[in-house]
Amino acid sequence: MSKKTIWRTAGWPWEMELLALIFVLIALLTPLYYDIQETRDLSDLPIAEQRRIERQQEANTFQDQTNFFWGVAILGLYVVHLLFAYSALDAISTPFIHLFSPLIFAIITYIRLLGMEVGQAQNHWVTGSPGEIVIVLATVLLLTVLVARLRMARHLRRFKGIKWDITTPSVFDSTFFTDLIVTFRPLVYPPRAYRACADGILIEGWLYIYPVPFSGLKGIESVRRVNYAGNSDFYATSSKSLVRLQLSDTLKATYISPKDRDTFIQFCNRQLSRGIVSLSADREDDDVETVPLKRDK
Image 1 (cartoon, rainbow, N blue to C red):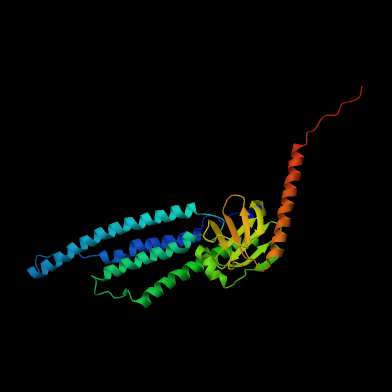
Image 2: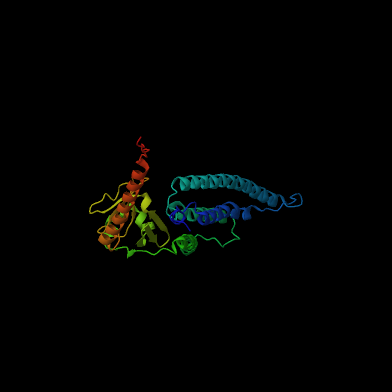
């Protein structure tokens, strides 16, 4: 496998998209179970029974209209999900949108079923109890975590043959909860370790990987004070050991918190310097103009 292939971006998260689509279909189709009504001949029934059944049919007609609007809303929400997911697609293997979309559509399904249960006293498998809600949410989150781990493992296989020069864990301290919590991203993407080799840096979390090749890195430096509410990405668990990565394709800074911060920075700067020297040498070779020698008469 070539270096370009190893360090390429993760691309579209097909595994997690499939999970989101499954919950979209569940939100659309599951409530239709309650719409199956039998066609009955009312002429032989008592008048009181006929009136009761007619009122029930009117209620069912209203329910059909409600289901139609629910279907339009769910499809529209899925289109919004696709647009946001596409616009926010980056090198991280587990996009933020795909982590929570299955949960959102599962909640919509539960709300629809719970609302239909009000008029369906004979069915009691959706009750709205706190314990039931916790079980539903935990089950969906567990499925999402499993799919994210499978996707992460698939992308980690690309780096199987790389010999890492530096592997350092992420520092964790108490100031994380008071400083970095305002960025929200560290709560969703807590890092586990950072790895570096001659070609780039790999940020490895519990549910994701984030490869940063040196060819796409402009600079790396340690920092002390940061505007945590600013436009930056934090893959860190400490505000005391922050390192800023400045990428070539964005003005947004990326912050990490390696334990061996000084050693990590020195190694990365050496690799960046070698890349600059190599690029300068290539340019000098390209600028050399070959002049034909004049022969003496």
